[in-house]
Length: 115
Image (cartoon, rainbow, N blue to C red; front, side):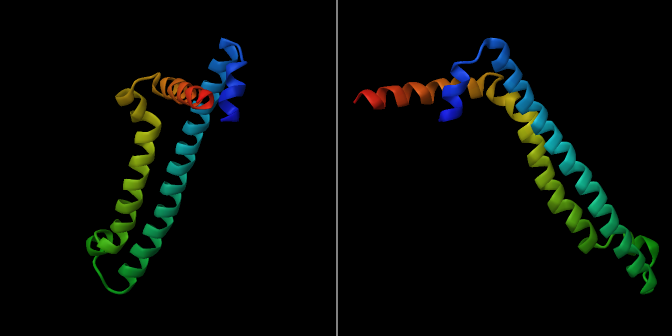
């Protein structure tokens, strides 16, 4: 709650800067997650394909092994959820949803303090 009280003292320009900075941090976090997803899964996929290929499987069997693609799928679902939280949520809830919730909670807190 302290953060919200501090934001109230800031000018509109400072409030916008704080919002934009938070947005940039969310984007950076997502792009880092995406990069780790691609690198780690690419390495795992390459190693598993080579191992399966050396065991005598055909190249197509090695590529379409579910134990390999399952890792991509499960982590991919998590990545999609992360992307939705960064890119999709404001479009559904509205651009000022967070600000409205902050105001609502502050009003509720204000009324509870007077009781």
